[in-house]
Image (tube, rainbow over all chains, first blue to last red; front, top):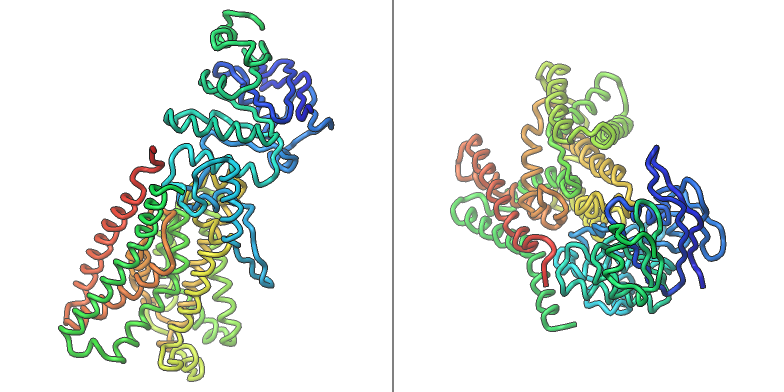
Length: 246
Length: 330
């Protein structure tokens, strides 16, 4: 089932055309690797899907219905979650508190609302179990490895029954071993029927998890094909322009 | 859960309580030291006196803990206490307000002052250190100008008895302080508002991305210190039966020293109300003990200066070790 369809999306910032007539769709349980050089339009595309920017022209369909997001909260409510490159974690809080930040589970005693930590720890534990991550809900994030930090950031997307998860450079600046952990997390999301878009510069990581590869060059979609029918060499050539289109 | 993570978890629990346990031990050592070296230190009367001064400081130190956690500071609390007390007395003596309505106006003043500091910080981007330094000077100066440096006396036995005396063997202000401690302790541990102070101090950018209203959280913390400075101003009047422009001289130092000695990091993000409570008692006990030793009050300030310096050294070492340089590699 197609969950997200982008039809002829263009975006201009003044005289600069960041995206030019991009048509792309995404199925549930599919991992799409979005690649391209700096300034190719990857982040602009993600920000349009997440409700940070509005497209200049073109339409977006979500679950076969036309949608228009004017702010990130609206996209979040529909089930589109973003994991930011810097993860947006508070080091001095526990993993569970980070996951539930602004969405804390509370018990009401009249006017007083008390955070229900035991329920939050329980739910966070289940989330980490789902993600097959060895992360302790009651541990402070500052004690954690890069892979565990990713698990906490991705754990947030599990609170709202996310249908589409957008990951911005999830494997930048972490060690080789942690990269394996993060790629495992992405596979978990896929197995649960969630559609994933991963932006990355790291070719091996993208090929390790992606079903399909899309390449942007100067705002235009120059490739959109199954990963197994492509190769890192071809994608590199597409990114640099050595191959015009594939 | 592996052996390794279990082990790591145990270590973490130790570190987070290390400061409070260390401070408690230091407190007991200081207590024993003064008890054995002076005649009148270990008496009920003296303990009441220590508790009383720890309580005035504590009432402002609890909200100050939240202010420091959110990476801000309020150094205007001493002059703010003096002016609030004076304002309270002026409303009663010069303008014939009732005690109740005067107290209400002074409390409202405290809230507005904190709101002003918060707006200056979040909308005009003026560091709280600068705004409160300006207020530190302005509030003391205006208090001296209005009174020409002379105290304004009031006489009301009920008011004095009710708020300046003792209940069940403990100073009234100590009961109020303990009540405030429970509220602040509870808020810091079990409420969304409390969590938001820590989140904003831990990573303001992330807190904003996630959807926390960072400005509102900071303004709320700053209203806390100004509000409690106003309350302490009124309680001081009940104790000494007058408003005095020179009151609470250097109190901002005692408050911030107590919070920092209690383990709150000046850089924000880290701190507990229990630590602050112990810090208040510690500072009050040292000040009191030094007087019993017959040390000159001016030298007393030198000792306090050394203590706050040592506390920050110990504090930053503990914090550094428990962080060991941010996210660890596995």
